Structure formats: C-alpha cells, structure tokens
Figure 1: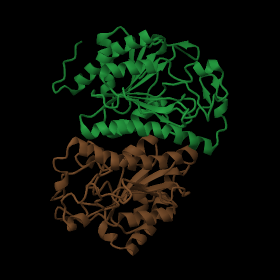
Figure 2: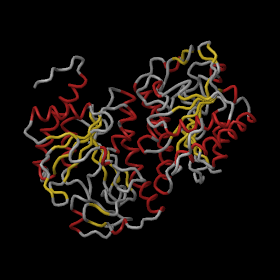
Figure 3: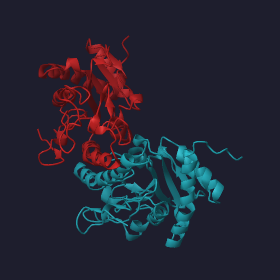
Figure 4: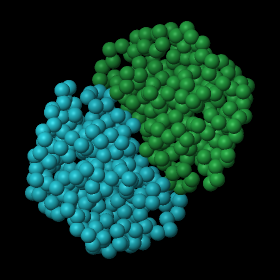
Length: 266
Length: 266
C-alpha cells in the first residue's frame, strides 16, 4: 500500500492521503470526512473534547469502511486528515458550510467572524490540495484506461436534532442518477438494509459538491454512500459492511454497463 | 503585472501562466488555446511550419484579445503555453480531442498510436497543472470576496472545411445560459457584430469542458467567447475588440445581477 500524504507542516497530519494509487479496479473511493483531527495552526476551534469526537467533527467509522471497501474493490482511496469543522471539503469555499459557524446545535467558536485572510488560508491549505489530489487520481485513470468510477463514503448520525433516523444506507446522486439507482436496486436485492435514494440528504442539501466537482464534468459514473454510524462502531462492523457493499457496487456497475440490460425483477 | 509561470523544464515555455492574480475585478479571463508552442519533449508532432502556425494549432489572436480584455476589466488572466495539438486543455483526458490524431483535414502524426504512458505524461504535464492553477485563482476569489465570473476567450477560423462562416462573435454557454444570453443582448444592442448564441460551436461539441469543470460545479457565472480570427489580425484589432467587448461583459453582468431586471426593449 503506497500512501502519498500532503502535509501542511512536518508534524501536522496529512491534509490528504492517497492510498493504493496504482490499484487496478474501476472504482476510486473518496472519504472527505475521515478525520476529526484539529491540527495547528487551527487547533480545536474552541470545541470541547466531546464535540471534537462527535459526528459534527467527522463521519465516525467512515474511514475504516472506506479503507476496507477500497481493499475489496482494489481501488485507490483518497481521504482527508483534518476535521470538516476546520474546512468541509465537500463544500465550495463560498459555502456557509465550508467553515461552519454552527453544526447541528453546536456553535463553532473558532469559525465565528472569520476574516477573508483566514478563509483564504484554509481554502489554500485544505480544499485545494485535497481536490487537486483527487482530480489527479481520476484524470490519470481517465487518460490511460477505462473510465474510473467515483464513490464517496460517508456516515450519518442515527439521531439528528433529537429525531431517530430509520434509514440505514443512503444512496445519493448528483446530476446522473444511473449508478445510484443501480446500487439501490442491488442493495434491496442482496441485503436487509433499509436502503433509500437521496436520504438522509440529497444534492439539494449541497452534499454532492465532490461528485459535482470531480465526476460530473468528466462524465464519470458516481455515487455517494451514506451509512448510519451505529452500524460502523468497530473494525469488525466496518469490515463486515465493506464485505456487504463491495459486491453491491460491483454488480451495480456491471448492470449499468451491460450491453443488454438485465430485465427488471418485480 | 505579476506572472506565475509553471514550466515543465527551465527552458520550456510555461504550461500555464497567471497574469494579474490580484486584480480587483469580478471577471477571470481564461485563454486555453493561447499558444502554438511545440516544446520539448513533444516537439512539432511531425507537423509542417505552416500547420504549426495555423488555427489547428491554436486560436490566433486570442491571447492578445484576452490580455487586453483582462486589462480593461481589471481581471486575472490564465493562459496556456503549449499548442492544443499537444494537449487541448479544453478537453478531458479521455476525449479523442485531448490529443487529436486529426484536426480539420490535417493528420497529426505525433499523436497517432499514442500509448497509455504518453497520454498520462501529457495529462500530468499540461492538463492537470493548467486546471489546478485556474481552480486556485477561482477558489481564492470565492473564499474571500464576491463570486468570480469566468470568461474563456477563443478565436475561430473564418473558413472551416471550405465553408465561410458569417458569424463574427459566438457566445457559448454550458449548463447555465444566463450570462451568455445577457452578453448576446448587450452585443446586439451595442455593436454591429454578427453575434450568435452557441455558434459556431456549442456544448454539444464538447467545447465547454473548462466551463463545466471550473465554473458550473462552483455555481459561478460563466461564458465562452468566440471571435472570428480575421477580426483579430494584429495588436490594434485585438485592442479594439477588447475595447468593444469589455463594456458588453460589464453591462451583461450588471444586468443579470440587478435586483430589479431592466425591462426588455422590443
């Protein structure tokens, strides 16, 4: 496994890491909210330790799932190393959510009243290198072989603003719903997961920036995978979920690329 | 004027140059086909000197127009320094047009039978640094101030496959036609140019890759400007056309951002 970390400073966690860059599979796995690190120069933004470990800071379990999925699919994995509360790389720089002043019910003191220079510095240190690295992975594959397929891996909290969520596996699309619909069909055929299209979020919530930026303009098939984080609480759960999802993704891609589409089975 | 050239080697022309990065205007000007340079390691691709100076290799007059327009609009200018026959940065790496084996009636010997390693090398040396540089210009502005507006500047040949073209000023849009339509309205109101929407090309011809990659996912207003190259034959013509187009672009942007749209004048 080859990793290519890009660090802001020698002691800082990598802002972006590319694992398995030369993997042979069709999929490229991306995990934007992999980390709850609050490195210098940003620090903890005035958040408590409990807040820093909560879902507002990252997608708990998503990196373990993404890594196991990349292994099962022989895919490169591109993941971030900084909390989304420092910069949410699934948002453009002008989005309110890029450097959010509040997440769910929690204020983020270090993001309140951010000036232009601070916004610029985070954009340059986190957003641009992450997306440059992901773009390079995708463009290199597009230049040389069959078109890559982008799957982003996220987790969501089982309770949001006090309300429990029944959905277990959300499958979200950007402009092209083809792969997402095929993944949904395979998930329903192969698992008992409560799988739903465009839940608990959809493109209307601005959650598909990475897909819109990296896949849609290149004409690449793409999908965003959201797993409820109580299903990803430890390594074993994460590996098991990857073992469930990998054949779903493979079958979904095969179905949409088949010259003679399989008949719908009602 | 501050230039930030990115070179493939100390003696090579810059693959991408950013002029006026700190300019204060809303527009960012991009000129993808600015150069007919055929630097090492690619060389002339087996083309004659006449072919290397023809419109198949670049957009004659476009850089002079783009530079004058950037000056008039107080805009950054991002331009390429390598012929589009080496790599057309307005095409994704998997496009047949990215490293075309034929342009109009001319074969491009050095592009025939290109292997994966050669395609990868050109993608990494030209396509990725150009678009990384343009993205950085746009993202920095998005992070700090009012949203930038992307205008790409091209020229087209008056005769194509033996057929004369009447259109003088083509205004082409990607997914969002708002700015293009406003530019057309201003061009018709303010000039005698034969101005047309989505001529001589349109998004269906895959000519809006830069807009689709750089502006559409960021929600930035954008337009592609195509000027017939017989109107850009010397510095004076290029400066005059810039003096014509700059107020058209400013007025078009003002019209679409006006809180109370001006009434249509029939």
